[in-house]
Image 1 (tube, rainbow, N blue to C red):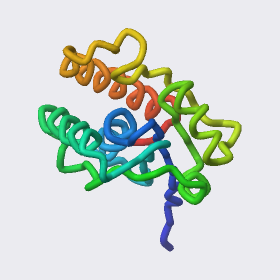
Image 2 (cartoon, helix red, strand yellow):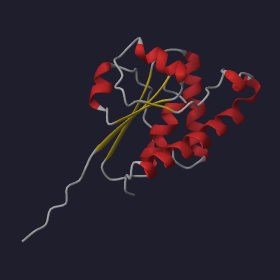
Image 3 (tube, rainbow, N blue to C red):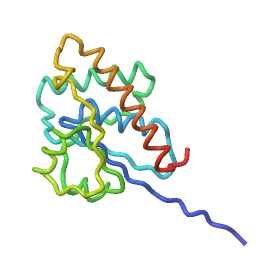
Image 4 (cartoon, rainbow, N blue to C red):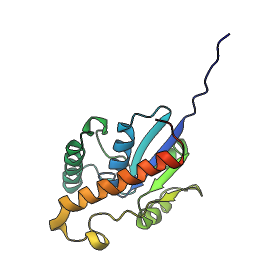
Length: 159
């Protein structure tokens, strides 16, 4: 007689504005944990893959991920938020701050259980001075790692 274990799949979707920093870090870091039964995606509310500045920001984030040894888990390009992406990855939806929530509401219908992590982007609030970009990137990385670790722990996603 064989016992079969039921593997529960959890779909997690991280959303920020351009999908080149905060949500990309969250997706990549969670993927790097290699947790069984966890499907992770990320999206942006305002993605323009042809924008040279966005390409530069994506490259900057790749450098952050490389410094932390997790670049092998990053996806190839940012992705635009769509209703289909919400519908297919809806167990846990995390938006990076209120600005992202407001922008997302103009694009998709968000489920009631979405989370707001209140992570300030570069160019917003106390992170407005572009000369401190590297410092801000590291601060954001650390904030997101803490939040993802907390999410894994509080949702009992087994390692």
